Image (tube, rainbow, N blue to C red):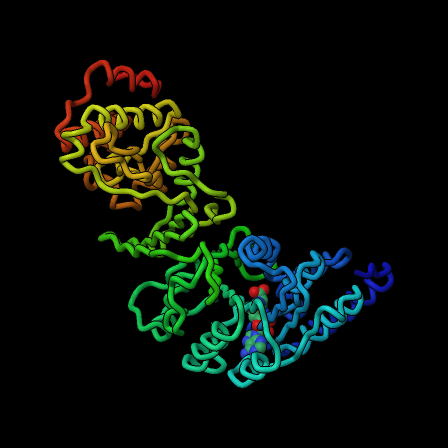
Length: 473
Ligand SMILES: C[S@@+](CC[C@H](N)C(=O)[O-])C[C@H]1O[C@@H](n2cnc3c(N)ncnc32)[C@H](O)[C@@H]1O
């Protein structure tokens, strides 16, 4: 790669500002004149403002999940060429072609490629994405990887639903791996695309896989890449809405989606739990209040305690977003049956107490200790006649409360907006009383009752309160 001189960089910046400065900016480019969509990833160009400053995070996710080694990469709607430039900088691809319908982008990218000696590896083409254009490119060349990142919502508005679905199907069939990033479709567009009557969200995995399914791409051919973020405007994307990235390929992979549970709660919360072949679970709230950040913090706190889900790189999963996505190790879970309680009563009782004691040791209240959240992880399955039932696992820390946090803050964030709290294991009234800190102990006692096991003893209660640092009032 060539290193341009300071003079060359200055001249290039000036020219890019001219090229991006035209008033007529086509669909998909930020309307603000002069604003790039992506940053320019070469030294010296940091001053150029870009709409999606989280592009480097997206690049990291792509590199983790997509094999670009010696790949021929087609980037449809490449904007400012960010991904192709990064791949060329890292020396992984063999050839890249970017296509965009904004002339200003193509000229900007060609200039940058030339300046850095990358014109042999990268080419940029001014063209509109439609079936004919795609058909020709798939016939003329073979492509290992194709990007269609945050583009298909523009296509439905340019060429319509049928053609966009057909185009995506052709890409899936014609390239090695196709990677898509969700775009900001409207609710009506999502319904028209999929025929499904359910809330749409840009960070939901299932919504993108349903759209792909409508293009003829089975869910089990899809794999999760990560969650890109997008605030819009020259503000920090790290605060912004999540946009899920999903890949699909006809080639066999071990990390494709195994199943998706779409959950709809009575209180208007829509959740999804996605299990992949490589032993991961991705959990997100599609619509309704998400307390993913609280859950992630709780699971981080309990990382060394047995019997809680294990997080996988939470910071990469976007859990710090309002629309959080939590990535966990997969477990094989099932409910405790009356037969388990009869055969393994002592062991289950001991495990249950260990879980609530572990919470208390970390000065943490789970607040929803009930038999729906206490499941047996039976992987590997307990052998016939085994003396152990499996590991009792306490799930879902979205409503957790730390004793060192302001109770008013927890009430405002968790208790008041969450009508689910208190359904099942304990009474919502408890949280209005002075005994709120007994929620987990009372929950555990109720579960023991359900399982027909001896209740919490006075000694256990005293030990629990001591760990929690509270005294009985
Ligand atoms: C929202 S941006 C996404 C850019 C890039 N893929 C990314 O994710 O960073 C959409 C890009 O697609 C281009 N675009 C939108 N509709 C297009 C079409 N019908 N044909 C070609 N390019 C299009 C826009 O000019 C813009 O660069």
